[in-house]
Image (spheres, rainbow, N blue to C red):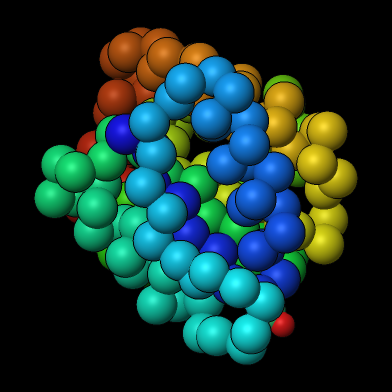
Length: 143
Ligand code: RB5
């Protein structure tokens, strides 16, 4: 299951992501927010992060206006590796190298066509399991 979260700046793009997930029969749960009214993005970052840490979701997707605030908030939570991506190369690399468990995007940064390709890449790329990448992830977790 994929956990989704956004604020008002990411709401519209999240609807596009939902359309992609439904068309591809990928299970998801939407943790809000559910409209374009002003909300505080750290709340949604936390909900999605905890869904992953609790084993409810496999991965998450978080979207705010820039993707920056929501990725900063998510990365404060131990065990979360949230990657802000605006291109498919980064989405692939962050899965292979960082074993990122949350994809962040900016609803005011990437268009819907590119965004769904980024999501598709992120969800379909496995971690490399290379020793050097595992070592670096362990070092991140030590902090
Ligand atoms: C909300 O206006 C905006 O600050 C938020 O969506 C995000 O871009 C923060 O980083």
